[in-house]
Amino acid sequence: MAIEVCCKAAVGAPDILGDCPFCQKVLLTLEEKKVTYTILLINLDSKPEWFLEVNPNGKVPLIKFDDKWISDSDVIVGLIEEKFPEPSLSSPPELASVGSEIFSNFVTFLKSEDSNDGTEQALLDELEALEEHLKNHGPYVNGEKITAVDLSLAPILYQLVVALPHFKNWTIPESLIHVHNYTKSLFALESFEKTKAAKEYVIAGWVPKLNA
Image 1: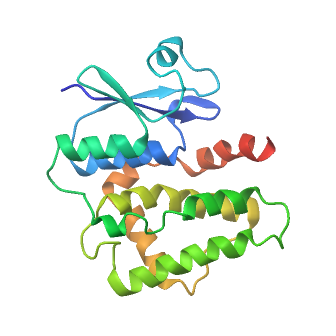
Image 2: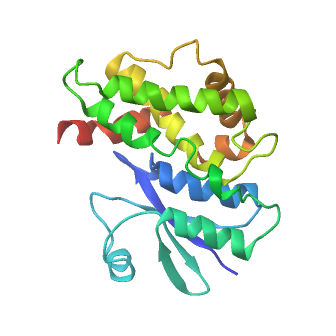
């Protein structure tokens, strides 16, 4: 089965993998399951005609399974799990929402121009909830074994630790020891190293969104 994945190309470098955390989530899943795939880089500022024909909403990631194009990273990850059940990455349904608000709170805080608007505290609350969960159930969200929840959180935490120090001079508090250990473990994965965007492309990816 020839699997093709359309991913965001880096801003200013169309031949290099860009900073989309949802694309990385899909690539991490394929890597962890040792599935062979080909990446098609899509310049989101100048989307190719064929891409818009098969995917009118123009969003990435997009994956081709059995000659059919499928979008939405959650749907894609579910499909990969179904078609390639080993090793299993599924996590108990009650854990699916662990850390699920971190990304939206991170983006809101990143874009915020008022230091007293509560966006920093909202992000801290989410990170503290993750800390509490990892303290009681870690080292990963579902204990000893990496699951889909971790592969979803890893790219988001990477965005956070790269973008916030650069744009906000803000870092995850040292007191959140389990969160720090968790990010270190995830970022050290071979699959992560292979699928992450370089830090300068994460920063370049945010510049147009923050200036919009």
